[in-house]
Structures are given as C-alpha cells and as structure tokens.
Length: 90
Length: 375
Image 1 (cartoon, each protein chain N blue to C red):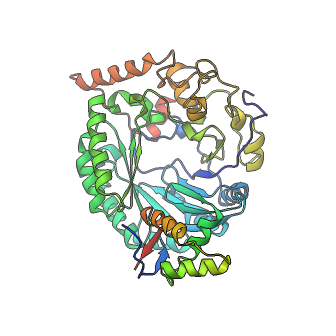
Image 2: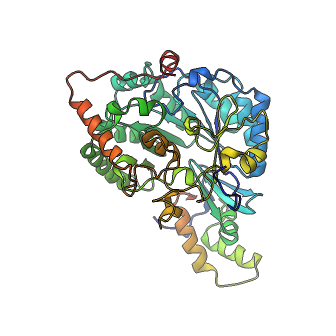
Image 3: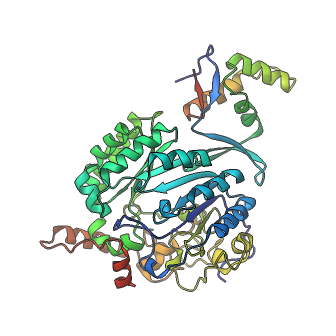
C-alpha cells in the first residue's frame, strides 16, 4: 500500500484528530489508543481534508511555512499514516 | 503512605467509568469484585457529569463506559453527550444485551465514538453457556448494526480453557462480522476469574497453539483488522507493566463513586480508596493515599528494588502479588525472579489436574446470589 499521487487524501473517519490543551499537542484518537503528534505531523494531517492530492499538500505546506524541499519528508510521513489507517484515498 | 512525594505525578489519560454492577450476563471471569452485590448504591447523573468534567480538565481523553452492563443506565445517552461536549473519545464496553438499532443511532447522535461488543465464543451453545444467558444471535446482530451505523467495531473475546480450542472459528467469526479491531483477551485471573481459575486456565500447549493461530491471522488481516492480543501472563517469565505504572495513566471510578488506580484495586487491603462524592478528581489523583501508594519505586522490596527492569514493568501487578502471595508489596509472582514464582506452576498444575479429573467442579457464575454466598 502506498500513496497514489493522483488521488486526494482525507483523514480517516474512523479516527479523530484533536488538539489536547493539557498536553499542548495534537493527538490521534482511535479505539484503545492515542498517538501524540509533533507539530509538523499535525500540520500535514490537517491538510488531509479530501480536497488535495500529495503534490497539492506539499505545495500548500511549503507556501504556508515559506520553505521548499518538503516533498520527501511529507511523502514518508503520509506513507506511515496510510499504513496506520490514519488517512484514506478515493 | 508507601509512595514517594518526590515522584513526579503525570495527569490521567484514560478514564474507566463503571456505571453499574448490574448485568444480565453471568460470565465466570468477570473482573468485577466477587463481593459486588454489597455495593448497591450508584452515582447519579450529576455526580457522573462532575467526574467527567473534572477528569477531562486534568487531561483524561480516552473514556470507557463500562460496568456491569452500562446499557442498564437510563442516563447513558446524556452522559455520552456530556463526554462528547468535553472532547472525550468515548467507548461503550457492552455485552450487546439490550442494544437496539434505535439506541445505536441515539448514542451515535449523542457523540459516542465506538462500541466494543463482547462475544463469549464462536458457537451459540458455548456462548450462551459462558454468558449464562441466551445472547449469541443478538450479539451477532448488534455487531452488524454497529458497523452499519459507521462506528469502528471492536469485538472482544475473552479466552480461557472452555473456548481456546475455538480460536480458528473465533477469528473467522471476527472476519465475517467485519470487526475493525479484535481484542483477544486471555483471561486475567482477578475477581471471578480468580475464583474459577482451575476451570479457566488453559495448558501451556493450548496457549501456544492458540497464539500461533492468532499470530498467523494477524499477518493475514494486516491493514484490514487490528488485533489486540492480551498476553496470558502465567506463561510469561516477566510480569506485565500493569496499568502502565500505578497512578500514572489510568483512573477507574466504580459504580458507587470509589476511585481506583485499577479496576481490581478494591481487593487490596488498607488503601482507603477515596470517593468522588467526598473529593474532587484532582484531589484524588494528586493527594490521596490510594493513588500515591505504589507511585514511583520507593515502595518496592527485593528483588524489585534493585532490579534493572523495574522501570519497564514496575514490579508487575499489585493485585496479582496480593492474590497469589498475600503481600501486595512483593514482586508479581509471574516474574521468574520472584521467590513466590513457584505458586504460578502450582496454579498451572492444579488447573491441569482439574481438567483431567473425572468430576470437575462446576463454574461459579457471576450473579448476585453467588456474590452474596462468597462474600
């Protein structure tokens, strides 16, 4: 299973992405589990709203943080996210 | 108190709300205390709302509505809604008994995140025998309805000597029902399971065979179904890191409002577990004797206190140490370094002798009558 560059990416409806005030962190919640996210992982997942494909997520994040060269890191993280079921395609 | 005030206190993350001890099922491995029948009073709706609010403010985010059977509480939808408004990720831990499609929809609208349905076996005959109630067909129906209404479906099967031979059929059933998560929970021997241990503890060969089958299945369904395998600690040589360490992560509130560092802690002597009617969750978590009792490492005896693995398993389970050795400060006897470790082999031998006996004594089912007789 790997990211299809042509398809849009959305966060899984079987998980919840949420800001935790006490922890000062975004977390992913799912049955019997919780993953604490660092800021960059959380920023990537928030872009997964079903309207953007991989290239659009990369370009929007590069624009947002006024930087370049994020494609490898973002792709690697999204592969992990897909494998864990945090995101879906089509 | 035994805990050290130098120990850094982390906030609670998981809250288990045992709404009631009432249950239409009679599973002989129930984790409720043997003497549950003497705790008749239940917190009211406002008490529970206050508890949820206070624990959430401290950082609790995973919430389990449990029991007994939580569906017997008429205010469940109201509590679910309150939990959702506070930002909890909430789980209904249910036998499925009494769960209708209408209720499933109502709870979804109230904001329930997922439902964990327990099934006792893969066949109607054995399920209904273990549950002490005809419930198999209804449970399967409930599992379908949970899926139909878009919840992640978590199927929980408690494994013991009566059903361990059904492992292949249990896995096939989980696949057929479309479970997103399957919890294969090898029985933990507390409460009713402790009383029935001779009849429930499988042999090592049975464990190993079942584990192999479950492992192969796990690989087969990777990406489709997630398997949580609760290890049978009697066949390990190191104890489990019980509750991720005492008073670090988990908070259980019993039906009558008693706050417990784990759901079995009621069995331990002298903890004076506080009640949410008398104290706030913050006071209970940070200041109570019970929650500080086994925090950190200073309470430990040898071989734990000088053990280089103590930060990994925290000396194992305090309730298991107490039940098996009579000393709640001792190393969990599951640990091969424990001087009490031979009691584990004795328990295994005793269960095996019971299995081979001509007249095996009957299971003690979990019901109010037996609770009163045994307490």
